[in-house]
Image (cartoon, rainbow, N blue to C red; front, side):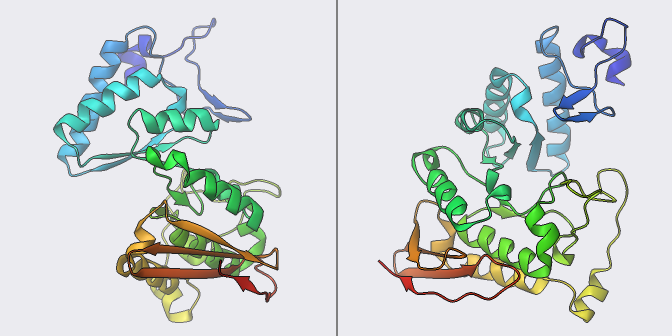
Length: 287
């Protein structure tokens, strides 16, 4: 309805049509991005009204799609405004963009952030990236390690089978105090729309996807018990509820990742085989 009642809130092409969304190389012809230049106050008032509508219905967490494509000043004002009246409401920044912008969004008020964990698969990549997240950035940025998203089915999951899904769940759940999975992860759904693509075939973005979790539980074709176990560990081990206490240990096998977390008298040590196809053995040095 906004396209009809408030065309000034969008970008109009020379031919008179409303410009659709693009995030190169992807194009989203079913989405019209907002233009904040023409009536910023009107847009702000309407967006705040919509947020409060859903907050009044009990929604307390909002995932914001591509916030880096909107004015930073808009988010800073909106997040501060809502925090004043509803400090328990959280906003997750779904922003796969330059690190500087991801950090800026965290600094101006986003409570959680998507990360590049989805594409960090080997030991060196994981170690370097997690050291970055747990360093000075931890003062203002709360990384949420998602194993997959509605838009991203990583190649590692496509070709690694059930072990790959288990490995990534273990890593996400133990490395960060906040982690997430996209619906269907429990069933190890890993079929891309086409070879070389990270998009899901039969994506839930475009159709209703009922799943038979009960049958999967009876036949053992689900990793839900593992996910339950991981969340139980996170609930009972205070060390896993912290971000800055992550320490990596030397392993003489490049396909193994060893790390520990300690909080007061609680210590958790994890050694994870990153190869979903073959077992590995090594010596771990607990320095």
